[in-house]
Length: 225
Image (cartoon, rainbow, N blue to C red; front, side, top):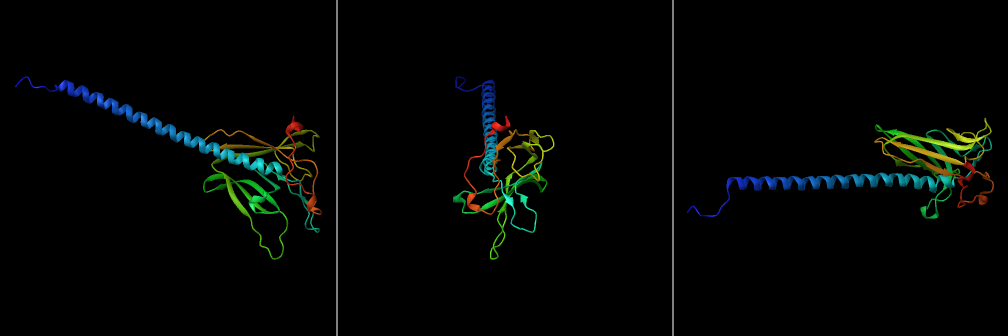
């Protein structure tokens, strides 16, 4: 009777301890894997947000047209491009696939919305509408959770007579050569500055609309160097 096989109490305790250790290591590995996956997803989302912002400015701001708002002969004509420290407006065009013809007035600005700061883009027709048409303006959120949104403009300074970066570009008769967009996120995520080259030669009146080239390539950054 005393020769039956079995486990002693010490052997059972050692086996349970090893099993507990294996379970701890297994769940720790799962936790680390899940955390790494989440961080990777957040990083991809962050990169995607920045890519959308860069794509917008490269596709639209880089092809901004130096247009004048001179539709009303009783009012003083105004140059369409106006740049401030936290906002900019310019005239551009959508591609044919967008099914929105005609030049559009883009306005990019920072707004505080429900205790969070966002950068929005509003788009409206640049040309006056006919009597039977209704005015419309679309506004979309470009990027959210923005702690700081600043723009700078490189061009000729009227006071110094030198080409330099300026915090505003108002009441000019031509567009700046470069626009720099600096964005800082609320969570401290790194966002590189975006620098866009603009068209600076030739300004177009609305007398001859066929003379406005939509698809020309903007000036290079060599003038800034």
